[in-house]
Length: 108
Image 1: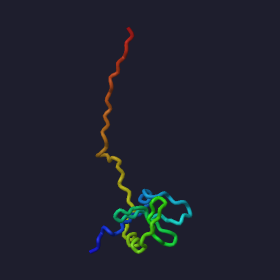
Image 2 (image 1 turned 180 degrees about the vertical axis):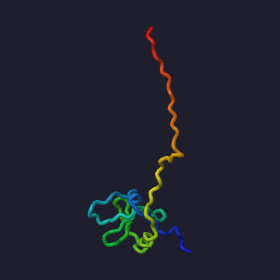
Image 3 (image 1 turned 120 degrees about the vertical axis):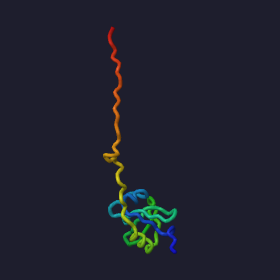
Image 4 (image 1 turned 60 degrees about the vertical axis):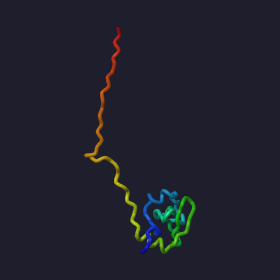
């Protein structure tokens, strides 16, 4: 039986890696793919020009096992944005406008 807690979890997409690092400038040797997690290890997942997978946290890079990462990336699904929280017509908020009394000062 395979221990699932020791498997790498990969989530693809820009919204995943943006929590751990900044967008790389044009010509940077890293291509950001998403996020990677295994136990307490969590960070952005990137691949270098020579095909090495790395975990990125800010500017710190940690090398990852390429064969494990290839399997994890193959199983990963792209990031799917959650449905927006905008109210639907049946759940629309009720707005009540109360009229305020105004006191008119009369000259005596």
